[in-house]
Each structure stands twice: as C-alpha cells, then as structure tokens.
Image 1 (tube, rainbow, N blue to C red):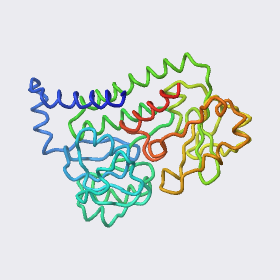
Image 2 (image 1 turned 180 degrees about the vertical axis):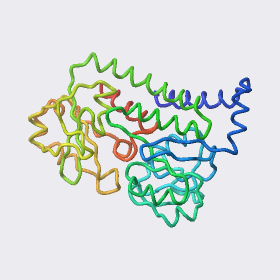
Image 3 (image 1 turned 120 degrees about the vertical axis):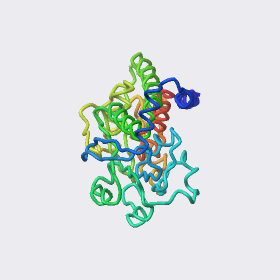
Image 4 (image 1 turned 90 degrees about the horizontal axis):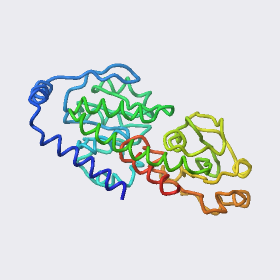
Length: 313
C-alpha cells in the first residue's frame, strides 16, 4: 500500500509540473536549454551534457529506476540480472541489451550513437573509454550518506531533463516514509544483523556499509558494532551469528541476485542459527536480493527496501 501511495504521489507531482504553465521564466529557460548543454559534476569529473538527450544509455539499475520514474526510455541497458520490476525492458527489442553491470558491450554502445551514457560504480574503470563515445556521468553513492548521494543523483538528472520539481517531490516522499520507519524503530529494543550469503559463505554488514540503510537511515539497532564498512563486508560464520544472537537476521542472497542457484534455507537455518533470538521469534528475513544487491540506490528500490524493513518492525 505504501508503495502505491508513493508512486501515486510521484505521478501526481509529474502531472502537476507538466500542467503548470504559470511560470513564464521557467518556460523561457527551458526553451533556451533545449539546444544547449549543462555541466554535471560527479566523482570522476565534470561533463558537458546536452539538455533532454533523446538517446540515453543507462548502465546502472538505480539510474534506470530514476529515469523510468520520469518516463525516460533508454536506447540500451544491461539486461543480464535485470530486476523483475523492469520486466517490461527484458523483451523490448527497441532497448538494446548491452551486457552486464560490470562488463558493458562497448561495440554495441558505440553503434547506438548515444547522446548520454550513465554508469554505476561497477563500471568506474570503463569511464574513460565510454567518455570517448559520448558524454558520460557516473551515479554517486556514499554508504556514509546514502540519501545525500541519492539527492545528488536526482539533482543531476533533474538538471539534464528539466525535472527538478518532480524529483524533489519524489525524494521528499521517500524521506518522509523513512522518517516514519525510524520513529517506529526508535520504540523497539530489537537488534539486527545483516548478512550477505554467497555459495555457503557469509559476510556481515553494519552501520556505514552498503546495507547500512537499515541502521543509519531507518534507525534499527546493531547486533554487532564495528563491522568492516568495505564493499565485501566482514567475513563471518554461523558461529559468529550465533554468538552475536541478533533479534532480527536480515539475509541477502547474492547467488539468487545474479541468477545462480538460490540459497537453501535449511543450510542457513542450521543448529547454530537456531540458537538465535531471530530464529526462535521467526525473524530471519530473506530480503529481495535483486533490490538490495543489484540496485538499492534508486527511487524504486529504496522505496521497496524501506517497506521490507518496515514490515518486520
């Protein structure tokens, strides 16, 4: 229900902006920008980008979410590992398959003659090569300030596509939802641990990590403090989880996210894990791995992630 309300609010904001013809100055500026460019600052530099580009390649699922929210359809995306909520693009032949989030098909990218290329952190090393084809920007992400990074990404897209008001409305709606969940979690003593499972191995994550949204934005207490904030987390084991004894155990299944064989819950919930409060209270939560592992920093995925945590509290 919350997701429906959120998307309705975004749609309403978009419609309002489209219909509001009272700001003559804004209309004049928009007309001038159509034939011009804007300078976008990002972590890899400054890029001159044409305003309202029609041929956009998106090599990052979070950026794809944000563009989809304002009705911008890309000419090419990576279709390997594409989240289910983007099923409409999977068999759409007008959207070219460009490989994966970590290895784009550069030849196909070049053939599409894009006016703008948007990449994520997994393609950071390909930035120079892609920049020779078309103006290229990278989405920002900061585990220490996830909402700040999101706002920066939305501001950049709002500048490029003249949709600042729409993105501001969407961001504010998301923040309001997150604040409500944080208020709820502040009344709970439950402590949580987040683990990534990959082929029988665990990595644990806490505040300041890629999955730190649970603690840093939604306010859920940590069961284990001082965990490594590195992308790969803190290597751990069933013994560690049992000793930590979280009240809530959040599990992200990397294998399922990338299309490999999903985890076996019986292997996860072994005799050691069964000692935890999380198991005893039915609070081992298997998160939507596509959302948490593959995207996780766009409007749609963050909305779903907040809902998942909210449903547990």
